[in-house]
Image 1 (cartoon, rainbow, N blue to C red):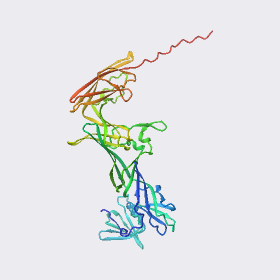
Image 2 (image 1 turned 180 degrees about the vertical axis):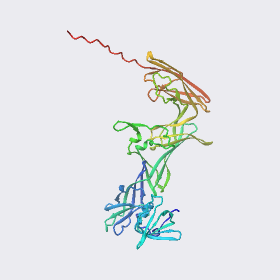
Image 3 (image 1 turned 120 degrees about the horizontal axis):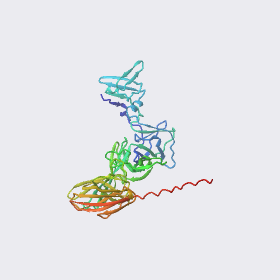
Image 4 (image 1 turned 60 degrees about the vertical axis):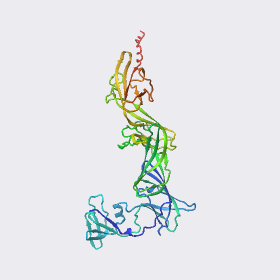
Length: 496
């Protein structure tokens, strides 16, 4: 039977606590921790100088608390501090009433006595031990079978997360303090949604952030700043399946001592590299999440490109000079790339960008998504939005001649591009010259230029709607012969 805990102290008035904060400011890091600044009015202390300050989050880090009086001539001397929350869980509640009388009820039976031992809630059947003066102790084998447990009234029970400050008795505290502390349980992530115009020349961009609060504390009308760390710029070591970066291999970086290569996130620091301030104060509910607008641009010039980079390699280790099968695999995927410059005037945080296409007479059409890195105002971004619908590429080797005596080889390919869309398209073909560092294009049916990466070239090919375009080309690789061996002269005979 489900355990129901009833406490008679809930009927009493709460002890004096600090009033709700006058102002709240949160700086939420991407690590899940937040730095919180609040101005609190302090209540009168108890006769023994004990001050109760709340509400605070249940995940507060007590060692991070710093209190500064707001008045110029006021002082606050905290002799000791502890964090208290007696209703956090069953263990905390029973610990608060240890050695106090409680009453257990099951049906019409009632058992009362002093709580003589703390129940072990890690056990499947925690037992309850009650002691009564002059009588044998009573053991209830399974506390979970009880209908209810009644606890006596206890005025100073901490029914909400509370900071307890012990101050010197007789010394009045300041009227208000600035309270700074850190707490866990806060996360944020950004999402970008772009809607492409029908002519594909511009897009509207909306950036929102999702802020989650996993604590028991509400934050009303809080000023919120989001902090991006060096580590937060890179993908997690094990990204979620829904993360656009999940299918990419991690980028490696040498360690500080240069002894090995590790994923960038593993050696990145937690230092803040960028901050994002929300436009208006917001209320962040306990155990809740909100979406807030961060930036918006109505029209950003864009360029959509179709890229065919079909070179693929199989799993075998092949000799790049002599093996004719090297690079004979290919991918048929033509990718869509989106190129734009950040004209929002705001620093855009990293996050998934979803691109859709809009038209006045139909619903939005899904194009693709990719991960947008941190983008400063005026910077340019190139995103890979996935396969282009209706565009197919093919890369076939047509010849390979290895001229070993002459230290040269020639290789030829045919690139075929199919456009199954109703519109004319322009496709950029990227070819990698991977067999050697010295190469020359000896024949090509289309103009070509050097690629963006070393030892590559690209063709810009217009393909009409419903048609196929082929591009044959040939490349010659040369390897210079090694220097001639040194002449070994016969050793001189020693003089007789």
